[in-house]
Image (cartoon, rainbow, N blue to C red; front, side):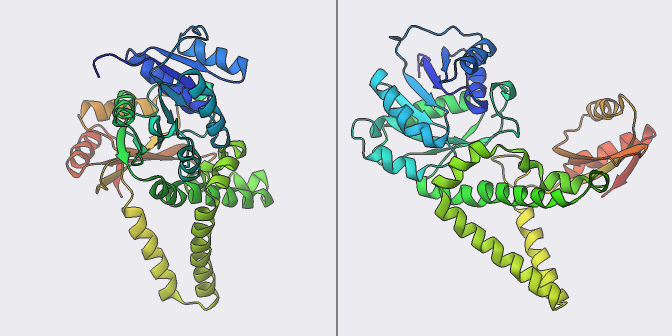
Length: 355
């Protein structure tokens, strides 16, 4: 588009404020609002923006509020900006779309969207301008959606550094029930099981437990809306997962090692299909584990070695046990970069192990 649209963001949480930061960096005129005055002031300060007068008009309105509030905010914003394009960024789509389709004046100007990005911390204080860099951002157009809505959404999504993926609202909700909502519930339930352990015993937990319970830090207040609006599909995924857990339990009772191995193999196969980075095809990496002393500056020194060797680290995992004098960092690299880095590190007296 030749002229950058003026954008109003309604909702100053993590996603709304991160959008504002990213778009401001790229030259967009952005104003952010929130029903909580203190939250609005904080977000406006973060993006260095003054609140315009009430009669100011916007070409695009981005609604970044909890799912249960989206429809009421959309109606209110339509009354203020009847010629605008409206986007939401909620985690579920189908239920909202059905409600929007019943509103003849709005439905063509509305486009559901969902950035596949987030953090365990919520609110404006957790916002980052680079939150969406390299991430997938789903749009869910319907036959009624204006082409202008799709083009404007594509423009700002790409301006935020994300990649656009398009699917129907129902496809979106079924997919997210599997890849987002179920993992959140499994992580939270697993973490709940830890309440029976003492702090002394939990101090012995390794990185695997931290990884599998990372999502358990998420806010129940946010997730209650998501779970309710996608409850039928989530229940279906829970039933499928419960069936798999039951198969494992029965195999353990029967000491059926073949069945247990088959379930592990399914897990191996499923894990291998997950992309190394959001929005990219699954890739095969080589892994190097590097032993590092537990003292200041060692991580920085290792990353400096990676830069000196001119290799790109695709992913990493860090493991360190209490009282241990060393830590173990595992680096994921392309095969050629792994060969190059291993040679470089060994030449500079680092303790390197192929994994």
